[in-house]
Length: 342
Image 1 (cartoon, one colour):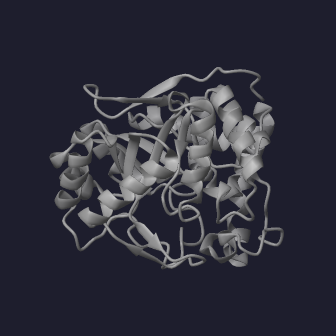
Image 2 (spheres, rainbow, N blue to C red; image 1 turned 90 degrees about the vertical axis):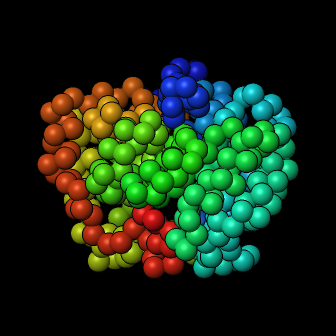
């Protein structure tokens, strides 16, 4: 199931009064800059251009991805194709040193303004479509953070406010200051945390949901049973779920997906993505996954997931075979869990 031309519908995130209309599938761009092996800018730009040609115009980046490199890469795309060709989501809140994974979390209003200005410059745009709090600084009142972001909306520097990895309580407090358009959190067959109250809050408050890592960082594609073939700088080598003991325990999840893919005549990745997309209807939430890739081949496969139909029986079977909490291993290391579910 490989698409030949533009055929993607759109989804509205956020409130009916002020929605953000995006392609029904987005593209996570982080791996084009770091964490998933060496970068190849020309290959990445070819994939970004192919995404636009296919109708995948919702691009996800962040200031921390490659410490600015990822935004600059997308800025090159925008210079070529024009800002009207894409909807850009970027983020602030994770502060790192060059070459380091260790991070600090900052939501300081002065830093927010500085980060926004730098992102605008790297992207080469006048306004950011969706600006996320990448991680939440627990010691700082979320109301203070939202006031700073609301001011940037008033100034025309950002159009919509998003938040990542937030708890229901934080969502409610933030939304009371200014409408949250989208919550971005990890969600897939092997990470189902948002089902515990988050989806209910999003539905109630008119907040869209943008699942990142919907393919389990590549694990659910069935392409890996160990980390042996990964680049030395691939962060999955130190991720608890990819440790030998955990990855072996988690193979049953891939086997369930592979069996259904065989029945459907599609790829395991397409089944895993189709399951995530179906959860939007299941939970009554506008949902737009952002699977990441730097290769056109996998982008095209991901777009093909939009044509995969999972029946009620299919969904029940996957829920039975892979229930919430079934995965072995934590989502991140202790360092990576900073600001998660805050």
